[in-house]
Image (cartoon, rainbow, N blue to C red; front, side):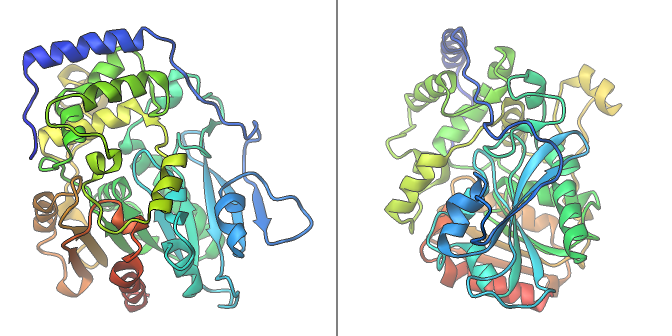
Length: 418
């Protein structure tokens, strides 16, 4: 059951707690990958060169797949880590393998596509089925904590929301793939990865360089989400409070955020004994060892401002750019309210595959219905919708049954729109 806005007394209690929490030193973790800027290409294929520390070495090459590490610079100066699995474990497939970009969600990184064994991980399954697989890591995550001038210790490094992922990160990565391969890419997004794609397509961005898009646990509208922890946090205006108290980086593993999380978990109706379920809903089909791997590496940092933006989406029930408040909106946008993303502007001919679950506490069925209503004039043969009754948020990327239920359908969709 979703919760209403907290009472004044509970908000005051939260403010008091935040004052206590953020009076402590804030731990900010810097990248250990050095200060080299620009493009690099590390090819890990068993050669004489020592493999670089990174996702390829830790999660891909160990399974016998060729893997390449790239760094992509955005037009606002962030340096993003991108991995490429150019072929399957057995090789082959020729030089014109169709590229596919995998885009993760909020508070995680691209490693979430690689936690299961190869026969259950979407990235490896796609590679073994003849696709050229690319994995993106948005700004602020473990391997994308660099900028041409800013340091992660600088608050300005964290001055962004998912609007900036739409305007800068996604175009940079898709343009890079297009230049490397000479081909349009297919796209797979999960959670916030679907949000930035939908917002981008609604503004006419990237549709000329993307062949089709798969949206797993699609997030566009969030007003019906049933995750107790997320709902309490959003409706308590936690984002604005943490911004006021100067926490630019939202690091779930840092002391201040950890203390805040403990407080939220103590609120009535919130049970964080199973933290993943408290956030995502009751996932049906996760392997215990995969969950352990996930909890070892995740969650990742994001900007507090980004969470504020997501909280605004929950509270306001609309999909719009970041709301700075009427006076600042005038300065920033030239109007009192932030511009809306109009999803009805997504080209009707653009192939879309949406898959959502009946147990998903973040991508609730009612909100998905609102999204589908915005797509009601989409060409019938260009829109595929899949509903899996017992799936929750994490099942789509880590579920042991996802290959049979979801991934095989994705491959067929791509081949039909290749």
